[in-house]
Image 1: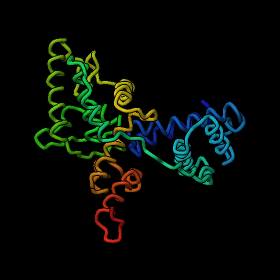
Image 2: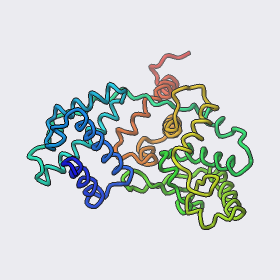
Image 3: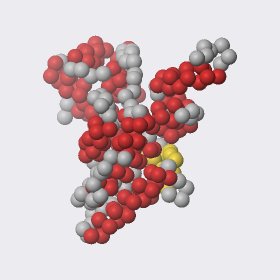
Image 4: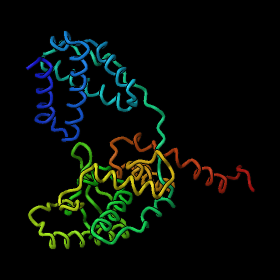
Length: 307
């Protein structure tokens, strides 16, 4: 085992056992650091063998990734992974200092979320889906995705016990193992109830009691639906509902936040529903409501121009 392989193995063990990071976060950090190790092995084998690096090597790694088309936010995450690895190695006295700390984070690109208009969102939810199990499931999946502003991983990870119809909320397992509660609208709740009835019927007819677990959304074989399959389903219906070409699965979450803010929702309330730890993250949606603010100003302010 090479020195870098030892580093990566110990780092992954530390993240899991000591820091207790979420599974997806662990995979992301470990993957970023493994990619850097592979870069060293291919381009700087002597450095790879010694296990001692300089800031220059990390800069070259990031430059190579940028040339491949990685965006600033992705580069920043990879640098963050390396900085955490360096801190771990310093704390374990493997390194005297962390060279990655010398590298500033890439400046974020101007963020402009692509989102559906309220009319497009309503059109997507009223698409004529088949009345078989898959069609009923897809209708509930789209409604819950948009209606609760979930991340793709959160939607896929939902269990039946997380839907509290009596309280009209759902419990969401967010990033970093955090829980949050999101309101469940009556129309969305009705659609989801109908799907769960179809789900129970399918499990009974196809004898999937042993295979079907607690997952809300199942594939046709009775297992929890995967993020990849869910992404394909959502993207298909998004493209039917909107002519925007850059729209993505995350656009439903963007739409959820934007429509709430345009309707006058409190920014902090939207922050809580989205599960953002920082208000700054939620504020990226606020620029889309400028038109509404101008409209309010023109109607209400005594110095505004009157038609």
